Length: 250
Image 1 (cartoon, rainbow, N blue to C red):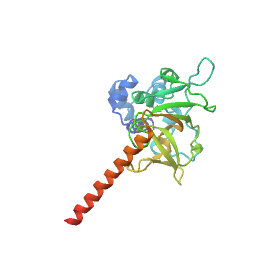
Image 2: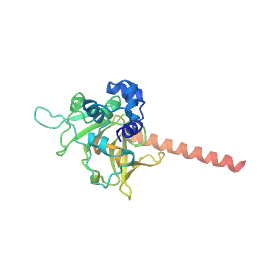
Image 3: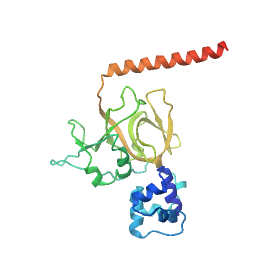
């Protein structure tokens, strides 16, 4: 199953054979032979590939990953890599937009986490926190560039419906959405507070990490942001009305 799993994971990450080979320090032809089950890697290379895709060696060799579905909401998420300050308090590492690509590949690597900028915010309850710079306007009134501070969610069963989370999405990157667990408990609905963006679903096996919203740092006046959002909604409604009117006239 190794070759099939390797190809499946690479396609999920939406990377080419050449990119994956470069990241792993392998010739592209060698990676291609692995995917076609023509050759097998040694144990050192196998461990490197498992780490690269945030998988266990056991899962790579014994499960048909394209057919795996989490059994229930009690699935644990991955072990969290953390750093601490001189007083043994967990740091709040900041993941900027520029650091997003590196974080998606290395969020389980303590050495990578140590390189991230750190911040400290008093009055947070005990727990593990991380800060993420969000982008886009899907979660207004939080504007693009705001920093969301989230508390680590250890299990999928801990998801609270209609609460907001930073989701580390294995193929689409870092997103900030309001979540709602689907009835079959195999996927979660991702909802934008900006109604111009339709909701969509995400299978549990595509979630790398979850961070529940606890606080945020904004760099714009909230009332100005809301007023601007209202103006945009009015313009959008006017545009739709004009289009409907044009169709009626014709």
